[in-house]
Amino acid sequence: MAVALSPAENLRSLLREPKLQVMPCCYDALSAQLVQQAGFALTFMSGFAVSAARIGRPDTGLISYGEMLDQGSNICQAVSIPVIGDGDTGYGNAINVKRTVQGYARAGFAAVMIEDQELPKRCGHTQGKQVVDRQAALMRMRAALDAREEGADILILARTDACAVAGFDEALWRVQAFGDLGADILFLEAPTTVEQMTQFCRAAKAPPMANLVEGGKTPCLPPNELEALGYRIAAFPLTLLNVSIHAMQAALVALGAGRSPEGLLSFEDLQRVVGFEAYDREQRRYAER
Figure 1 (cartoon, rainbow, N blue to C red):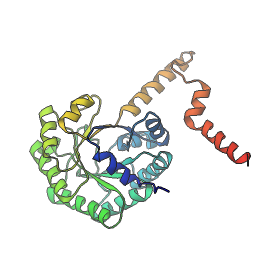
Figure 2 (cartoon, rainbow, N blue to C red):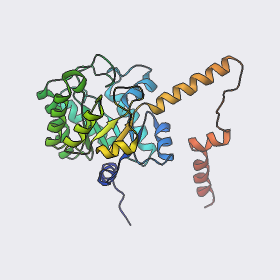
Figure 3 (spheres, rainbow, N blue to C red):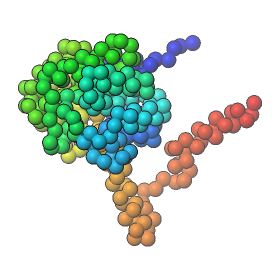
Figure 4 (tube, rainbow, N blue to C red):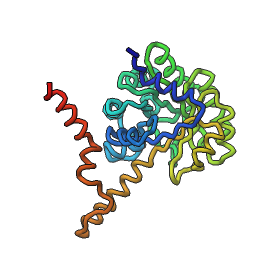
């Protein structure tokens, strides 16, 4: 009998494939299941989207480690594809970073993202963010990698937000340093030109990830162009949250005007999507014994 691979091992396998992985991001168990049902090979728990959906607040460091871990545990249990988790700044000093990585591994994440912003952190495509100095950034990364080496079965996604704060050259230095330390995936947030994206991919010493925010700072290139540049993951962090809000607002306008909202699933399809069909099938299996 074949032994099932761990989430981290599954993600390592995907990253060995010589192609771009398109990664829609989720914010709860249902959105993660929809990503899996659509045939995507992996997903990412977006801190921006979780903060919006769970506490109704912006991604400005207001949501806690415990809330993110609880949300992530539900997401990881709901799907079989690898899930990458937003670990923000690691929620404190080096010991906090290690605890964050260990907790995310126990929750079932395939990878955890650790970034170099100052607390409180902000969404990478908004104004007002700051980054810690090089020494502190490298300290966080060493702590995260130590947690991995000490037994946490999880990959480390290293992120820098230095491009918008200290310039592209500093951001490039940081991702190269993170790669030298042994990070598994590299993420230079918010490059503003294709040339910057190209330089990042050429310099990356681990699989590079692009973050494509509709209306954000980074050019939203199509997957074939991103793959040609050398990217291995293309994250779409806010697409599902964005279209969900748009659809709910439109439905509320229709209800307020006395009309039935457009674009509704049939009740049968709705039941199937949320799992009634699978539940009933499983229940019958035991009833027939």
